[in-house]
Image (cartoon, rainbow, N blue to C red; front, top):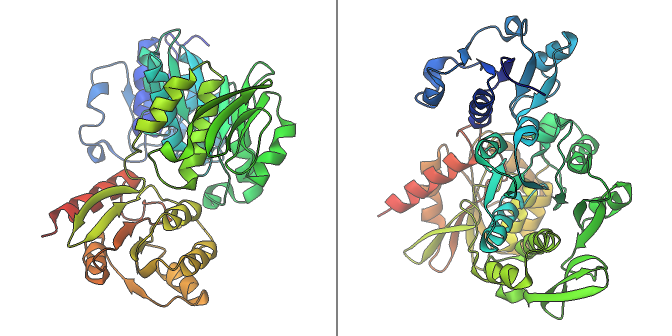
Length: 453
C-alpha cells in the first residue's frame, strides 16, 4: 500500500499509536490522531508529533473523523469489535492494527513469540542470542518498543524479534514471521475474548500466514499446542523439558539438545541456565530452537544461556532487608504466571496479590498456594481483593490481610515476613485498576521497598 498523502486515522495514542504516527510521517502520510483522552492528559508524550503533518483530534468524536480517511490503524488496547472498528468496516474504510502496519513497512527477518506467559523473557533472551551472533537486532512488539518503532530504522538483513499479544493478533491480515513460537496457553484475557476457545483462536493466528518455508515452534508439553501442530502449514519444531522430540529442542541426560533432520547438537547443561525455575527452562528451550533454525551457532546460544540474568519485573530480586528478600514479579499478570512464581519460592513467603479483574478463576492458584507450603501469608489489594479472599477461603487458606494501596501492602507484608523468608509481589492480575501498567506497578513497589529503613 502506498501511504504518501493518505489520511490515516490512528485510534489510541499510547506508545504503539505514537510509533505508528512517526512511521507514517516518514512515508508521507497524514496521521489523524484520536484518543478518548484530551491533550492535557498526555503531558509531553505527544511532543515529538507537534509541528508535523499530524492532525490532533484528542477527546473529540472519532466517528466524524472517518470521513475522508483512507485507512484506520488501531492500537492493541482497541478491540476489533469496538464501535469505531465496526464503523470503519461499515464505511468500507480498511482497518489494521499497529502490528500489521509495522510488519508492512519493516525491513529484515521477523521472528514472533506469543503465549500466555514467558513471552518477554523469551524474546529478550532470543534477541541476545542474535546480538551475540553479530546481527543487528531489534526486540519489539508487546514488550514496550512497538514494531512500528523498529520499522523506522530497520534495514534488510536485520533481525526483529517481536513479542505478540492476543490483542494484537485480532487485527492481523498479512503478518508473516519466518519463525513463530507459541510457548503455552492457559486462561487469560477472557474479559476481552469471551471464551477460552476464542482466546486460543487468536493465539493461533500467529501462524496464519506462514508457509512450508517457515518454522512454527510449539511446546510439546502443552496439550493444546501439541494438537495444534497438525493444523499448521509451516514446518514444526517442538520443544520439551520432559520428552524427546524428533525435530526441535529438548533435555537429554541433563543437557539441552537441538535436533533437526536427524542431526543432534548439544548446547549446554540445563542447570547452567542462570534464570531459575522450570518455566524458564521452557523459555530457554524455545529461544534455543528459534535461534538454531535461523543458523545461530550452538556456542553462541550456550554463551547467552549461561550469561542471561532475566528481565525486569519478572521474579526480580529487589533487596534484602532484616533477612527478608523482596521480590518484584509485577509481570505476574495472570494466574498461571503467579503459580510459576509460587513454585519458585523455597522459603516462607508473604505474597501480595490482586489488581484489575480479567474475569479469571483464581482457584488453581489458591490450590497451588495451599499445596506449596511456602506461602506463609497473603496480602490482597485492588479490584479483585474480595474475590481472591473468597476463593482462598474455599481452598481452606485463612492467612489473608487486606491492603488499600501498594505502600500499605508493602508495610503489612514487611510486618508479616520472617527473617530468611521472602516478600513476593506477584499479583496474578493486570494493573489497570491502580496503575498505568505492570511496569509502573513494579517500579512503585521497588521504590517503596528501597525506601524502607
